[in-house]
Image 1 (cartoon, one colour):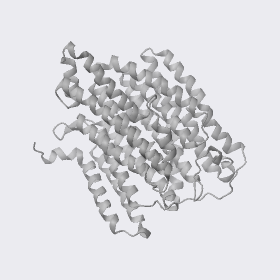
Image 2 (cartoon, one colour; image 1 turned 90 degrees about the horizontal axis):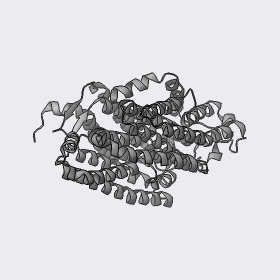
Image 3 (cartoon, rainbow, N blue to C red; image 1 turned 45 degrees about the vertical axis):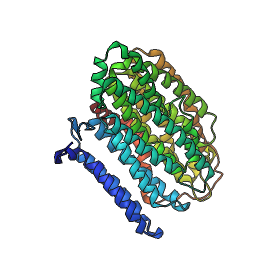
Image 4 (cartoon, rainbow, N blue to C red; image 1 turned 180 degrees about the horizontal axis):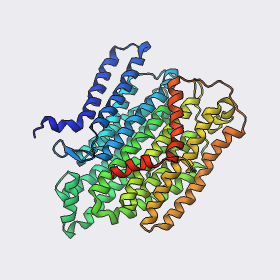
Amino acid sequence: MTFEIPDFIPVIPELFLLGMACFILVADLFIPQARRDITYGLTQFTLLGTLMLTLWLAAPEVRITMSGTFVADPMSDLLKSVVLLISAMVFLYARPYLMTRGLYQGEFYVLGLFGVLGMMVMISANNLITLYLGLELLSLCLYALVAFNRDSTQAAESAMKYFVLGSIASGVLLYGMSMLYGITGTLDIAGVTAGILTASGEFNMALVFALAFVVVALAFKLGAVPFHMWLPDVYHGAPTPVTLFIGTAPKIAGLAIVMRLLVDGLGPLHADWQGMLLILAVLSLAVGNVVAIAQTNIKRMFAYSTISHVGFVLLAVMAGTTEGNAAALFYVIAYALMAAGGFGMVLYLSRQGLEADNIQDFRGLNERSPWFAFIMLLLMASMAGLPPTLGFYAKLAVLQAVVQVGFIWVAVFAVLMSVIGAFYYLRIIKFMYFDKPEDQTPLSRGMDVNVVLSVNGLLMLGLGIFPGILMSLAAAAR
């Protein structure tokens, strides 16, 4: 196996990110705690530099390199750019929290960068082994980040649950992939498709078993019901910046492997996996929205909210059409932006001695900070799917794709669940505007956090009024 220089051109962003992550890992050993801002600055430089390289190398054609294991196409360019942008926002929002709690360590940023590298590999994987390695790189980083606060028994418990259940899911995925390899004789995703089309009838049952293993593993990684048991505990037990990281960019990478593996690789089995995704989506919509109503901890509420949003994404993929795939990409990007802003507001309200992870902590926010109460209003309205926000158009695009393939009852059910789910978002708005504040401590953050969080919230309105910008990118990606 030989590689020439042109082979490495599409991989330049990943190589730059890998090199900088290794450099920061070593350099941080020589940076005193009082100058930890250097590590933070290098991390942001790495993410933004990788983003610039990704945009510079973006092209409308499909480029397959590294002996067929790596693909760069419009979908990978779009999703990588969003992952890098949101990861930079995560580190920005997390910095004040980490500084006030003695967690401002270089390991947080190094693990985050390697996690981002894993996501980028997942997004561009064109081979089953490449996909699995990217997924495991991300997973190992997330396990360590959940346990990052070593003084918290709750974080340690959550990390252990996440590690054990995540390892089982990884094993299930690997078993499904090994069955696909045994049937098709290849690890390349395009080769798997060709192998399925030419496989004899005696392999039909084996293909269904392999598909079931793959779908179960992907459902676990996304947090779909009934494989969601880890999600609320991990969201609740992990430090809030880690919850923010887990709840945003990895969902984008998760959808990417669903697209690569199910839509592209197992496309000939669409009739089989469509029914599986339909069941997962309906259960996720029902359980996520109903159980979220009973939550008083906002991190657990967001966990069940995530489950319901995953249901919408799976509905779009289930449609099996170009419009459905574009709607899924649009929705997962919209969700990542909404979740980043929502957890960003939780971090904004937190301070030493107050996690601000209870919905009661948002009481009277309008009196303490009218502007950021308005930003939270936009974020909650978008999550609820109220017009004219981004979330409304994202749900509308999914519903249109579902109706086009004849699943009208599913669309009606999704609308009903969205109406039920709107309650817990509107409850937070009610607390902010109609209740008296229990905490009168002034809210003050750096100008960088104020500006980025404000832009994050205003995007909910801007992209909701002009959704064609993002939808055209999503449509071009599929």
